[in-house]
Length: 91
Ligand SMILES: [Zn+2]
Image (cartoon, rainbow, N blue to C red):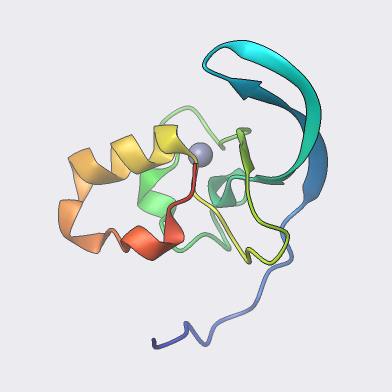
């Protein structure tokens, strides 16, 4: 897999309640901010919201380097369907 050589950005992470099918499980899970929270470092800046930056948190594995939230994935599909790399999508 070819890596983008540009700046590696360290994305913010936090613990976030795990909601399963609308039900709060009472557990906390590792989450990461959507990469379009900072489109300058995003690999898919053209999928950012029209009104600014994305502020969605997505549950990820602790070794995930970056994540695109499902809202941005949908926009990406609409705007440039050929650019999606499924292994980078994790929601
Ligand atoms: Zn997003």
